[in-house]
Length: 68
Image (tube, rainbow, N blue to C red; front, side):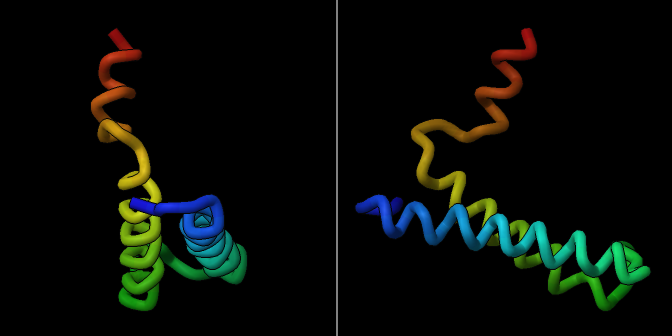
């Protein structure tokens, strides 16, 4: 969990950068199902996991509740 706004901003920026890298990879003709994309997927998962840890409840649980 981040202890200040600067740390939170770093987590947001990391998740954003991971998304941008994946978009650029696809725009350049990359296949997200290829071996070359594995590191992109891993970074997206790690970055989002780190960001989501800032929230009190898992985001997936809140999404399920609001869908009811």
